[in-house]
Length: 260
Image (cartoon, rainbow, N blue to C red; front, side):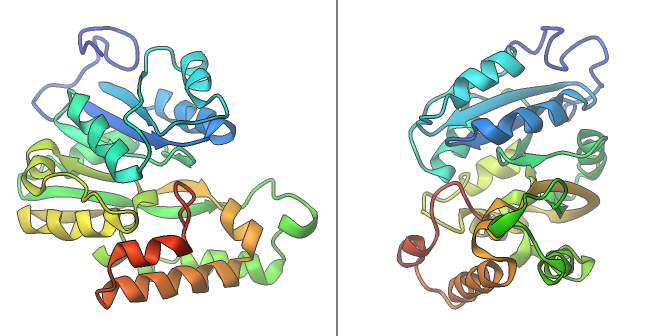
């Protein structure tokens, strides 16, 4: 995408300095039902920005939804694998700030301004947002949250958990300076927990910032499996990762592009 184009948030309001342009990289796989809302949240952000959707071989028309909802976005097809897709998006990005956004996660108003402000500190290498789950417009029946399930989801959103880098999952919209991203070699090519291993490496190159603003991410997996059951599964996998279990051994217990 040409940074000189007025479309896609790259117009005359572009801010000064090398950290103005934010490249938003979205790894996607069969994300047609959700990615439209994600793109809409990007369109409301302060320029300059560019959007790169790295599609992993969607069979539900995801690239077509992107083309219709945001024609100025770039769509690439690097093959399947979240780390592979994010690294491929970073390789073609032109911004000096890279923001990695899940296809079912929406940015809050003013998100990019907050990222630019955080990285105005030269000691900062990157960071992430807080997480809120999309609990509104919940379905009825088996996928609906009961009062206990909603309370449990709200507990997981609590600030208590949000200031530790080992909880800096990818659905918190990780961002990094381009030099720091390059210095760590991007996301490790592994099938799960590439986000946490990336953050662990990134912290060796500068401060990791926890923004107070919240991104809103889908709760569909929790609805499908139950809030408590799914979170216990997540906790078990996370504990095994912390204990040094190789990601390839953990991967069979968690499917691609439907994390957390």
